[in-house]
Length: 315
View 1 (cartoon, rainbow, N blue to C red):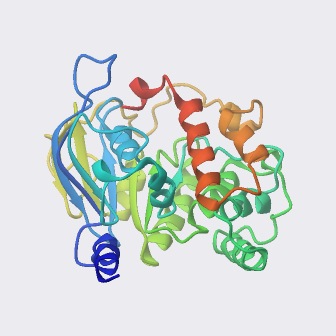
View 2: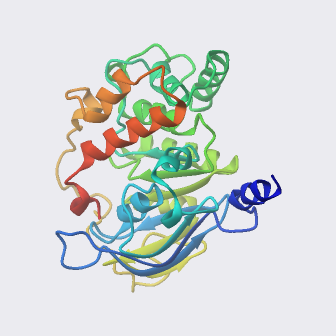
View 3: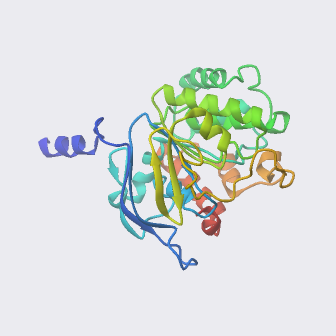
């Protein structure tokens, strides 16, 4: 009995330790000759807001996938919310992901579900009692400024409103960590500003926010920690930084200078409700009789299936 209590205490995260820690992490994808990350060691504290910046292919999205345990490092160790991911059994991964919210560039809302139902689902899959769902969903929709739009379908919402629904869905479980992969990438500058204000508010409430982005204005306006990656290496880590660094030596490429037009954005299928991903099918058909962990596990596998073959471009 005492031994069990000791093991349980050991599994609990310490509040004085980093919420995310990479130790000498290298990640190589099979189809890539060069590593996506090379001997990366870095920490993120509880309650911190940090930007990951760098050109496409620099390793930003690979870091997020590793934190979610969507993929495993080739070598090295990763600790998330007090857990050593290399020692985490596959059946414990869904429980880990309850502590992590995820926001995507393309929103990934269910086209046939209302804003309320999209947020509600994040609670249903972990077996939250109905009375609690009815309390939490309106609260979080109000927090993101959509208290009066809960009955609207995604196609009846603007891009910014759809992203607010996605953020509400990611935050409704009050996660320890919120990961955001280009959350303003499909939005106009004014709408993007509102989304960044919302993420800053969530951070002020105690959630650690880690955001991969090419949005120079967002990074410069918030003046938070900036970690710059180049070819899988950290080349800059500033406590309060800007997108291009304090000198002209920053090697970010691929960003669009202010005022330069490189083409008109076309919304993704999931933003317009035009196609159904494997993950959408899982949302629609999840087993209400299964345990919470089983439901989350089924959903995780669907996301992994729908994203298979994309690892190269995500790196």
